[in-house]
Amino acid sequence: MIRYATLEAAEAALGRAMTAAEAAWFRHSRSTPEYCLYFESLVILLAAYSLVPLPLAMLELCAPAKLTTPYKLQPQVRLSPAAFLRCYKDTARVLVLLTIRPLLYLPYPIVKIAGIRSGLPLPSAGEVGAQLLVYMLVEDYLGYWLHRLLHRGWAYNKIHYVHHEYPAPMGFAAAHSHWVELLILGFPAFVGTVIVPCHMTTFWLWFAIRGAVAIDTHSGFDFPFSPTKLIPFYGGAECHDYHHSGGRWSQSNFAPFFTFCDYIYGTDKGYRHYKSSLRKLYWKKNCNSARQPLVWCM
Image (cartoon, rainbow, N blue to C red; front, top):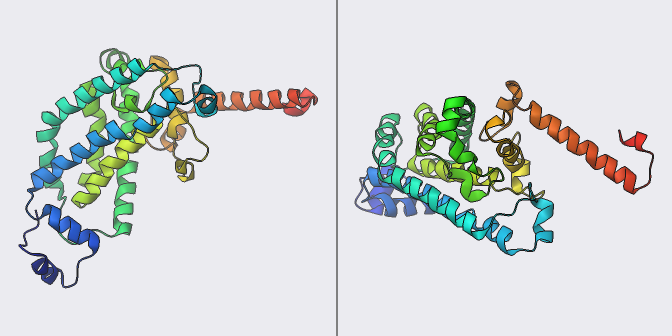
């Protein structure tokens, strides 16, 4: 909540004119309690999980197979509209129940203790970018180990098996999990904000990015023109799709964002062997079709 009655009073306190973004934030937040501003971040997360997967879902369900097959990571799997709807309904129910109960009450004290602010001025783009990078790195490391632990016997059998119900995932499966898993893997998202406190708008952006990345890695599609190809060490859909295809026995690609934790701890060996095998098959196929000696393709 911004404690200024008018825009002029806020500008006087700042000692300068507000930017357009600051004026918009002032109008939105001046009479809104901070608790409600925090709750809006959960609404953003729910909206992201509901809306962002829709375009690819419609592409898979409505577009001709010959159009989507070159980009689909498991083209032999075609989920029905009923499967998409069931996945979304199951996921939305769990997310809404978590939002109404534990997520509505538990993390807000952490937000306050961490010093996340809602006043003016708004952070610069450089500050926001640096904070988001810290949050990604913190969550990537903690999420890697928590996800790896969830593949142990009891944890998988009682909790993580729900998420692996879809060996060939789609965007709606990003949050298709046991409610305990959502709390466990959601915890690292708050750790970075405690280490490096931010503005509430950055907090919103962080949760929107988390949702978008989770949906992208579970999309089941790998487009060569995707802008995510420009992000260094980004795992993306191909890495996580391989993880899902292994089910409970998967020992590769545990990290949520990047690839270096799996590389450092040796849990990408199966995936790298798989990629190497695909490359060999590709070159053999192309060399045979060109009627060239096979020795040149080995």
